[in-house]
Image (cartoon, rainbow, N blue to C red; front, side, top):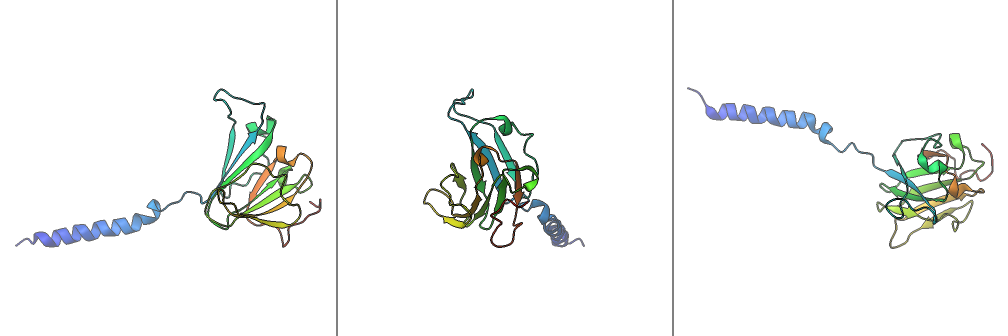
Amino acid sequence: MCNPYKNSVEILTGCLLILLASTPVWADTSPKATLILQKDDPYLYGPCGWCTDSLILKENDHRKNLSQNNLDAQTGSYLIDLTGHAGTMVTLYGSQDYGLKRGYLILVKKDDRPLAIEDIEPLLPHQWVDVNTPDNGAYRVWYHPAKYFKERIASVRWGQWWSEPPPASGKE
C-alpha cells in the first residue's frame, strides 16, 4: 500500500535541504558601504538645474587614479557622501597612487547613519576630530590639508593603511 505522507515528507525534506544549501546565494552580498563623490560649483547648472556627475565607489573598490572620471575636469569643490556600518573607513587623497603630498582625508564612520560632508575647510588639521550632528552621521576624521585638495581628489583607498596617528608630513 502506498503511503502518501511518506512521499510528502521526502519532498518537504528535499526542498528544505535545497533551501538551506542555497541560502548563501540569497544572502546579502551587496557592499556594506558606498562612497559618492560630487562637485559643487555655484556657476555650473546642468539640464536639470543644479546637477552634477557622481562618482560612486563601493566598499573595497580602491582607485589609484580618478583622473578618468568626469568630475576630474569639472570646477568646484567635492561633496562627500558615505554610507555603511559603524567602522567603515575610507581615505581620499589629493595625489594619485595614494600619495600624501597633496593632502588626504580619512573618514571613519561611528554609526550606521549616512554622512555628508559639504565643506572640509573647517576641519581641524593633523588630529582626530569626532563629528556628531543630529542631521548627519557620526564620524571621526583626520585631515591633512593641502592647497586645492577640496577640488582635486585623485585616489581613494578603503580600510586602515597607517599606524597611529596617521602621518602628518609630506612623506610618501
